[in-house]
Image 1 (tube, rainbow, N blue to C red):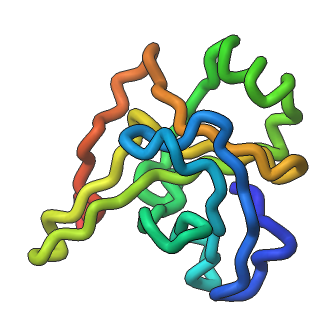
Image 2: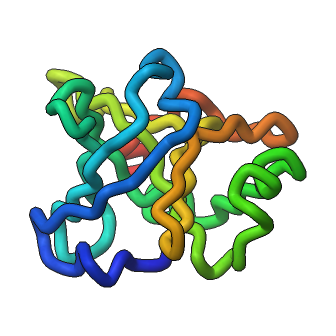
Length: 138
């Protein structure tokens, strides 16, 4: 997973823009992405107004063979980006019993680090789950 150079230290923010918002929050377009740890695993995504706010994780740390492929429409949205500029994050839902926490691998957040343009994509041609246990196998 690539790193945001401006967000290389925990709690530094990177402004990103979703033209279409996030599913369920389509009217919110501008967010700050906060890097929460030194291992590039935890991120928080917070709207400029503070609500909504999401915890996101590096999906490659959850599933080693995660290999998302953008649709032609999604590639067009980003203007045919260099794949090395794309960052994938999975929204997590943390449960009171931590081992029941899940991540959405089917609809990751994709960010073009060169333009700060973002989109939540749905990986239609994949079997990735919407709710995968965050700590599966641990």
